[in-house]
Length: 109
Image 1 (cartoon, rainbow, N blue to C red):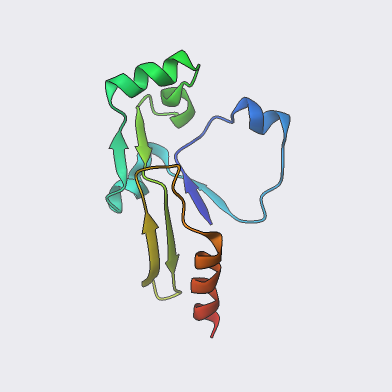
Image 2 (cartoon, rainbow, N blue to C red; image 1 turned 45 degrees about the horizontal axis):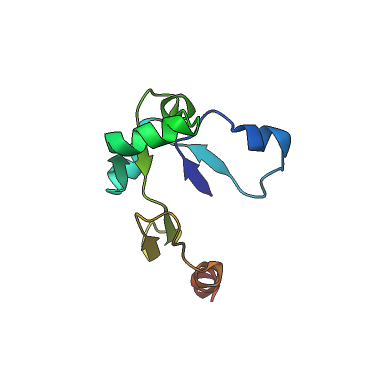
């Protein structure tokens, strides 16, 4: 499952629609991210850069804010226990998908 605050589709998504093979939930107002301590407001200098590139985050969020979640992956078992977690404020550094797959395989064992 993916949780995202984004409500407006980007032009790239519109041009290249691909069906998701997983459930996607909308986190309006970043409430879930906030509950996990992962929500932050983009600083004004970065807001200006986003605007120069035509990125309208308040519209994309649908709530008028410049808030984003820290990119994170959680593997949560059926009992609600977090079995693996990865979060990094630098969105360019993402965990290896193989690590997530391995954590999921351990749940099945």
